[in-house]
Amino acid sequence: MKKQITVGIVGMGEHMLINGHIKHLLQMPDVVITRWFDPNNSIDLSCFSNLKKQPERSSFEEILNDDRIGAIFIGSPDKYHAEQLLSCVKAGKHVFCEKPMALTMDERDVLREALFIANQKGLIVSSCHPRRFDPPFVWIKQGLETGVWKDKIGKVTDFIFDFWYHEVTDKWKKDRSLLKDHFGHEIDLYRFLFGSEHPWEAVREFDGYDKYKVFGVSKDDDFPNFSFTGYRSLDEHVYQETVTIKGTKNAAVFQLNTGIGMWMKDGKQFNFPAIDYDARFRLINENFIKAVRGEEESYLTADDMLVNNISGIELCSEDEQFAYKC
Image (tube, rainbow, N blue to C red; front, side):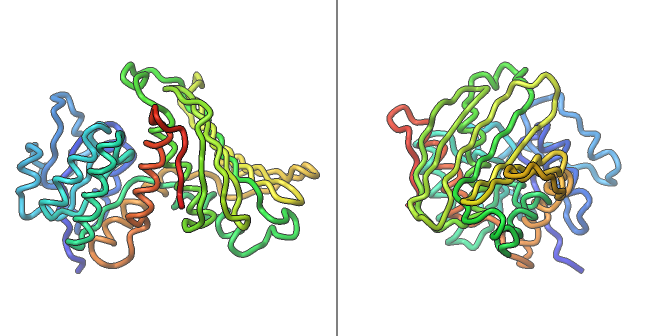
């Protein structure tokens, strides 16, 4: 029998409730959600309807002080993430914290402290970068690592990621930076595909609640440069994402939603696994629970989480438009 993991939930927003976490946690054997906290009095708790014992609505402090709870999922509004993460690790809890884990220069230091304490206490801290588990990105990584495209594409020189999401309708989202909200996903994907140890620098071209663009240059000739561009402008509630990998001989474009790619030189199409949102969120939660149990390594290191969050903060700073990984 596996060790039971007792979980507390902090923040019962749409992502936590519907697709991101609770749905998958409830399907895992020997994972029990006992408490949840959210100041909203109109939470839809239908996700718990089939449970014999309903999780108890609690305060954040009650969750921290409950010795039965070994792991906490933080899905509260972004501005609370850093301080709540720090409180959780001080209380000796493993933590899965939604991104961005920090939003300001001050919160950057809080994040550093939280990750240091977690390391000292042997606690697992993870966050939400599910592209690492999504079939198309796993497939692309395997192709890059095995060199199956080397003769056709040559040396990889550029990695380009573009996305188009639905138009912003929530008023509060119009007060936030799309770059700060999303750059962590893109730079994490770049590091996942091409490695995390080489130096690079990036510059912000533009940013707003509905668009952002960043250019990056690798300071090592063995690694590609990158460009990330995102828009929130679609009428329909869909996500459209494409990857372009350029080389010295050719370029390949991957339409991630359809699983159809094209070689730019001759226009020939090829197929690959399309995005699977359900699979990637299931696997990301499973990895956290298995890491808490000691069955496998957490898919994110402390360095991953620092780079993913701090580089976005630096790019959005009024005093700085650059981010560095040296």
